[in-house]
Every structure is written in C-alpha cells, then in structure tokens.
Length: 112
Image (cartoon, rainbow, N blue to C red):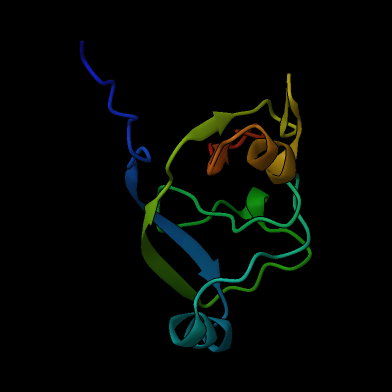
C-alpha cells in the first residue's frame, strides 16, 4: 500500500514593495519587518506589487522617501474582500487562524 506524503508548506515567492521613510527602511534592513498596527487588515506588513505606492494607499502611518523591494514567501494566501473580510473572519488574525500565511485584498485602488 502507499504512503501519502504530506505536502510541505506551499512556497509562493513574490517580489513586493513597501514604501517607508529612509530611517525606517534602514531599521527594517537591520532587524527585519515588524507588523504595524493600522490598516484594513490589522497588524500586518503591507506590500504592493509595484514600487510606486498610489497616494490613495497612504495611511496615517505611511512615511515616504524610501521603497524596499522584498522577496516574500507568501505561503498559503487568503483572498479577502475590499474591507479585508472573508467567510472565516476579518484581517490577518482570521487568516492565521484559518491556516493561511498571508492574505491579499483590494480596497479599490489595487491589490495589497
């Protein structure tokens, strides 16, 4: 009889961009990203697929002046609606509880 190998973690490598201030950029390069507190999806790290962040995506905590290009393993990605809601809850905490590593949503001005 055969053994089913459990699939390993899904790899889902994407090149993404995070706009921030020059000072924050050097802190991130030194010690890695830390999730923020604001945003539709809660305490997540927000990335977009293009180096230029649309002005509409600037939040109260957005600083500009530097852009980090990151190669991110998104793992299992949840898809949520424009307010970062899904059938299993809202935001990154629900995605984690649902067994996802990341999520994408489009608040109306492009996917994050």
